[in-house]
Image 1 (cartoon, rainbow, N blue to C red):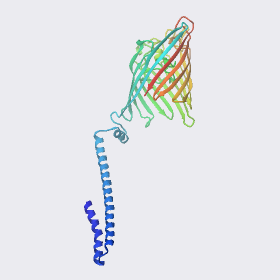
Image 2 (image 1 turned 90 degrees about the horizontal axis):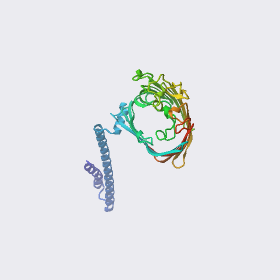
Image 3 (image 1 turned 90 degrees about the vertical axis):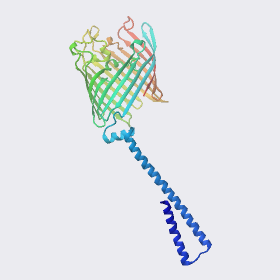
Image 4 (image 1 turned 135 degrees about the vertical axis):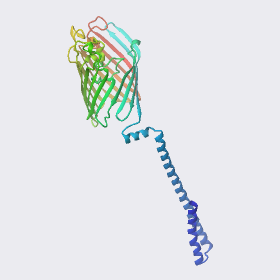
Length: 423
């Protein structure tokens, strides 16, 4: 085709020249040479244009062919982009479109001086190894499980490896503010706020004894406009009578509101919780009998705030009634235990982020739970690499009864350091 086009152009250029020759006669050699050079120059330009046009046509044809092949292949071998587009078209994702993984490893060294008898103990501990897996099954359903290894130190007999959580969540907060969760998970009672390395190396905060509640439960929740509300039911381990052992008779509520102001760098969250059976919590169920004469409910209130580089967290948890004296006692009568924890400090970006936190905590009528009456502490959390935090701190505990020896009041001083990575 290109050859015919060139011949046609040459013919159209030569014909006028021949006709002119016939009509007007011969021209000088110089005139003929000039015209021939002009014609050759025009031909060279035309050839270049035709070549460029041909290359452009080939590129466009190649791109069209590649796009066609991609479309055909993507239908046979789906990739992540393919499923993402299908999710947008159909409102769903592939059979299991995506997995999210999380990893937490904590290792530390602790030294405890338990006064008044002067005993001292120290240990190196691989405190925590936690692996979490989340499967986004489709637009409305996710599944999550968490494998947890814990070593509290000072004894190899207390290490554990468990499937800590495994549950399904039905809901899509982008589409609808209501969701449901079913399986084994930590139900929301309190918030257990802390900036210190937590259980099991330090057994902090003191609110952990009341606020850690891992159960097979069914939960329904609502989240919108900064407001979060959840209600749940479960079959607890501590019952009122032996006949209730197989009954789903424990329940709870949690509600909180979060306010954020980016221009003022202000974040504020306030919340409250209710639990129908406080003895079901991990810190109390190991102390009281498995069957109680009556169930004692509990409540919690918490506040978490940050303003610029400063932060303040406060939390209170307590029973709403007294236990029977044979179940949990305080000075010869039934105990009505409560715990509280306040932490404040700042973040300073001097190299990488450095967090400095101070703690004031304590308890009331919680002697039989081995919770200190007062606790003071300080910790430094320094980011040393991406996703890597080095912590060092000190805690001082005062107990209202003789836990370590026969004195009327015992103290425990704890120095600790820890490396933690989290992905």
